Length: 367
Image (cartoon, rainbow, N blue to C red):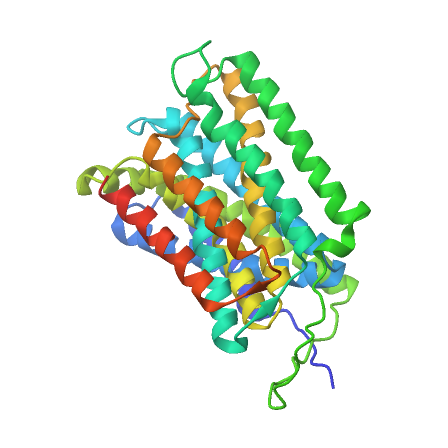
């Protein structure tokens, strides 16, 4: 018998309390208050995961993962623009680049690596539809090169930056590529992004996942409302706590690029948890849809939005990454292309990707 889903009480209470506690910042300050806000920030992110999964399950694949990717992009763009406009001590000229690069590396090596390892430990091998993954990969590679590598080799502006005209042109191209991918994913070749039925069911003791009953329209409406509340308070809390992050970065003496990793970590936490849970339930296709969808949205939607804001607001934005970052990015794209070339995954592929992720974090903290 199918299990029913109910809206969990904490997913309703936490966002409401988070809004109330945030509104008290006019009269409360201090480290303890910041710690409480951090707790509610994490709680709001986890609640957003739950509500987005209810909506995704109701609308079905691949629309659900697309919706979640779009919601995450809203958070990312809001954080980047708000911090670039409000922060004083940080070198915000490179904040968009650091955040987008961190998001791509976290997704390609961290999230996908963990998903492969988690799925391999439980099921040894997992399958996915190769056509959908290859379509996402070629789109991602082109957009990554346009945004993060090509600016280092243009001559109209200083190294690593586009002129306003170049920035708008590249942003339009990337936006069109993302829209084209979305059309392929949702309309023209939707079957490429739906999980194949595993052929190997040799293990007689393997448990069959009991799917919950589909949420009603009323439940989905409630989830949409609370998802908006969750995403809104996440943006506000992260912006407020960015001052504490700035102080911490300066006190520890860490590189300023670590701020981009922190923003990417906050932004990708809902999608990361959802992707890992899907892999654990033998739905690797959903995990890959989430991962590549969020990577493409992160760079294909966020950068055009930030680019428009930078042109209107007349502030500079460096996009080109350095040689070390290009080497790590190229290695990540090469390894993940080989790992996902057969339509099956095993644990070693995930371990290699995770090792690249740890190396990326280590060389960012200790350049």
